[in-house]
Length: 362
Image 1 (cartoon, rainbow, N blue to C red):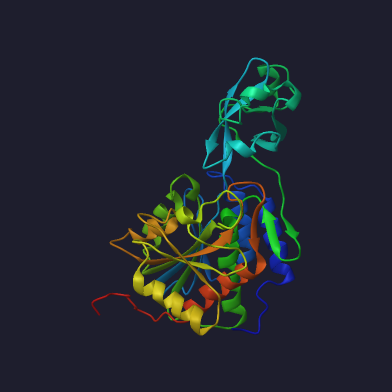
Image 2: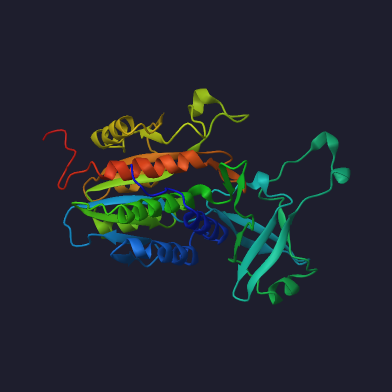
């Protein structure tokens, strides 16, 4: 496809810095600054909005507009209630998993800085073996080492403070990327690499390209819903993660089949415009990019839905990255799949013609 290495040392260093920075839903701006700084040499200008979505634009004066998109936010918690003896109850900010919380370390974000804490859990010796309770929202609490509510508040912790996990990026067995929040800052990383490859390979596009890192996907696709009305695109190619269904306790008859290392997943769904999807498939076949297929019944559950049904209808498609252990702190993807998603988006963009409507009636 090009003479440029897809994942070079600089890009991996960016990925690590980007993932290790906290970017909870509603508080994405520090991560967006890191992303924009990396993207700056590869775009002509930036668009940002009130809630923090960031867009790098190539050919901003072009009338025909194509979006490639990922989302920038990660799941987190909010402080919901502080007991008189200094323990903290939480509510979700996005789809945070209560079952993995027990015994996890946390960072509570306050105006005074990060306050460290732990999700406590009763010792095995003290639990009723006949009536074992699993972690639930009403029985997991954060301990910040205080003995009273006043002590907790003196640290700067109050109701509404956002809470993230501190788990950081690492590479497992040379080819697996592991981190919290790969869902879906890996998407922002991949679309940034597409922009880099276009610049370094001196590719000129006949349309405006809007490299879009949306906020607030985890609570209902809200960032994409806002920015699509600002951009008013003609075409949108969205990337997100999807479940590797080959690990234990996942029923393939319900969830379908996808596996890390076997390529990007191209989705069939009402929101996916069929002709645009077929362009992706044809491109993958012609460029010998391995891919998998998935079907969604009513909605994809990704920002694809927000773009597709906006502005009178936008031709939209979804390329997903297979991922293990979604919404945990050990989300895992395969390096080859990351490279192949980047390749597929890059090569597909080169096939889109200015003014192409993907209409069934042309």
